[in-house]
Image (cartoon, rainbow, N blue to C red):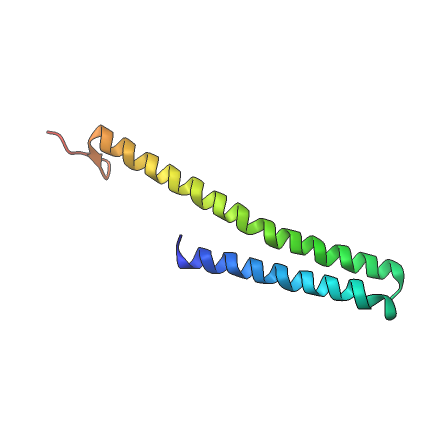
Amino acid sequence: MDDKTKKRIYLFYAAGVVNLLIGAYVLFFGRNFLPEDKVMMLILFFLGFALIDFWMPIMIKKKWAADQAKLEAQRRSMAASGTAGGQSLQK
């Protein structure tokens, strides 16, 4: 996996942790200064984004693995047919 993809995955995890922390803060301390319905709306908002932030790296990894498998299959088919770069190696 290239560095750009790894960095994107780590940033999604970091954003998920931040969203969880903010959601937990609102859950425990938001009731002191916000109405009950607004507290629940904010909790759902931050926890929803935390779920998305932890789900996205899974999807990125799956897509990367599928792309790698597709490239490997193309390499194998090119090797089996005796072509390289669209040109025949046999004369």
